[in-house]
Length: 143
Image (cartoon, rainbow, N blue to C red; front, side):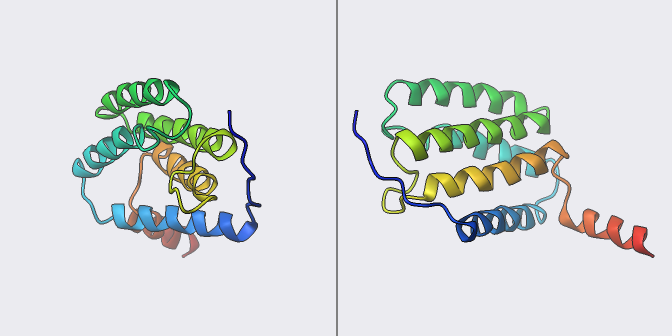
C-alpha cells in the first residue's frame, strides 16, 4: 500500500465545487423531461466507472456494478439518481484519502468531486426541478 501526502482542501476549493454543481443544475434545467432523467441516469451509470484503475483494486469493479444497478432503478425514480450521487460522494472521499484522484494531475479533484456530488444528490432528492420553476416559486412567495 502506498502512502501519499494529501493537500489541504480549502473553503475556496469547496466553493468552486459547489459552483460547478450549480452550473450542472443550470445546464440540466434546459433539458426537458423525460430526457433530463434519462440523461442523468446514463451519467450516474458512467460515474460508477470513472475510477477504474484508481487504486482500490477489485472494489472499483464492485462499485461500478452497484452504480449500474442504481442507474437501472433511476430509470423510474429520480431518488435513485440522488442515491447514486451520494454513493459517488463516498467513493470520492475514499479515493481522496486512499486511492488516486479522479483527475490524476489535480490532487484535490476527488475531494472537490465529493462536494459537487453532494450538491447534485440534494437536487435529485428534490426531483431535479428546473431552476426556472424554483425562481418562479420564489418570486410568487415574495410578492
